[in-house]
Length: 139
Image 1 (cartoon, helix red, strand yellow):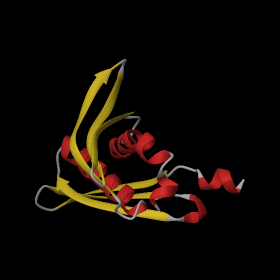
Image 2 (cartoon, rainbow, N blue to C red; image 1 turned 60 degrees about the vertical axis):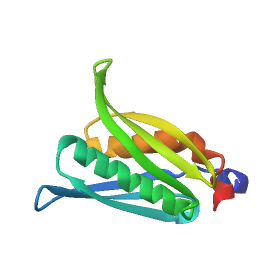
Image 3 (spheres, rainbow, N blue to C red; image 1 turned 180 degrees about the horizontal axis):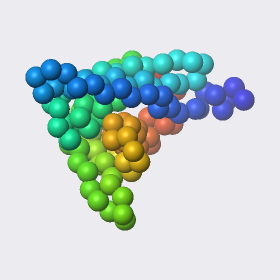
């Protein structure tokens, strides 16, 4: 059981998205890892359909960076929605930098009622293979 706990992945806990004055928005994302550790990321952006998705995705990237003590940097390159297979899907593109190594990663998630939640899950989808098995070594 201890080995299984050690290899557990970061889990999505919560996303909060608020509209601010002056056509701005803010987002707060909470991620959890084993033993009750929580990592929070925040971001602000422009209030628009894509702007609010971007805000949630940025907050997720900041929470992931906190989870690995900022040893990996994530930059949100783009976010969009597409309609495919009778569903609306959020797609994110990120640049990840670890030491001198950088790579572009892509993730997606179906919008199933909460667009901010889907944006957060798309970022987690993109970083799943990058962080999944390496998380123990990055902490």
